[in-house]
Image 1 (tube, helix red, strand yellow):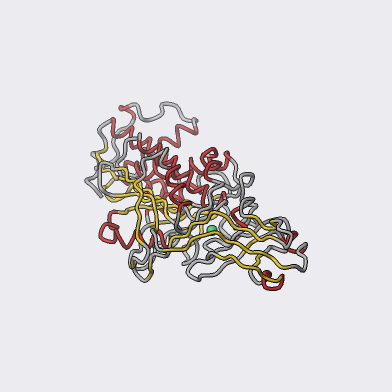
Image 2 (cartoon, helix red, strand yellow; image 1 turned 90 degrees about the vertical axis):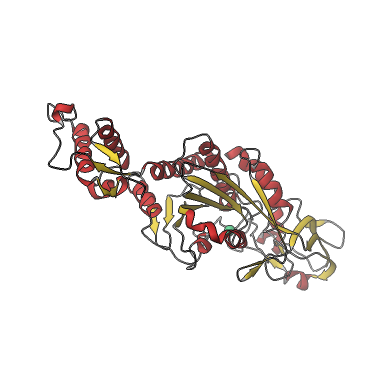
Length: 421
Ligand code: ZN
């Protein structure tokens, strides 16, 4: 995952253009993505697919011709989606197009100008304070023209057409936690699931933020009822504790799954209620769709100083954090896959566990006692109305223990799976 992130890091992505295509091509080396191209001007609900932006070079040079702000050194130097420009300006006019972070004088901010044609440069505050009274040549060698919006989709069919949606955004330039961490975790999750047995079908979306999911939803509105669970994965490569933002529904199975995992993780975590700001859950959870889609992050956007700056780089995200986040997503998927509902075949009084070798002959083994409790809870609540996760929640036991008990009882013929939920 980290190696893929290193490959993707230098690419200058935006909401449209070659950067997204190059990114999808690299993801496509790991999973066979279907790449969709939607023409500029296409109406998608209340929005219109914007022009395609491509950039080859940009700089600000002083009167001696030396590049004092240079896109080749960092793609964050250009306000993303800037219109092309080639002009000479005074220092004061130049300053009206410059963005810095005075509180972090050696970081470059990340700024965009979507849906409002403009141009600008971002630079460190240190560079800014060193600017001399001079005339400056400003060049943004870019095109902003009718083209396409590009997104990637990977669909993995399972035993049922019920779907799990995993979505991440692919529109930020050289920023690791905000966009690349979600991309690489989603890619490797897709890769792993492609070779695993699956009850659910899985749909992975690699989309530019906001306009991407809006476009996808506009083109797939008739099929979204198949989405039974969903996760937006983003900002999951930093060292912070996990943050799960619930779906708008608030108590969807994905909300129960993520809450259960985090509560039993033994590590600090945050669970927050849905609010209509953040990442692409905003679109999936808009009232017309109200899909059961939550958002898994580590430190939430805007709550770490590196957010949307050049400091969100390859040092800020580390393999160990990506790996832990991957595990978290995989645990969630496994729980969704195994969260079945059963019916006890012996509902009139308890079955005699001892004669089946399921009851400890001698007391005192705490672990065994827990396993026994799990057996009793599963037997009692398997009335066709309680899923294993609900049993785990009600009993306070870990899902894995409850699942293991159900498997044991299945082997003994004491449970059968309830007909599809
Ligand atoms: Zn962002």
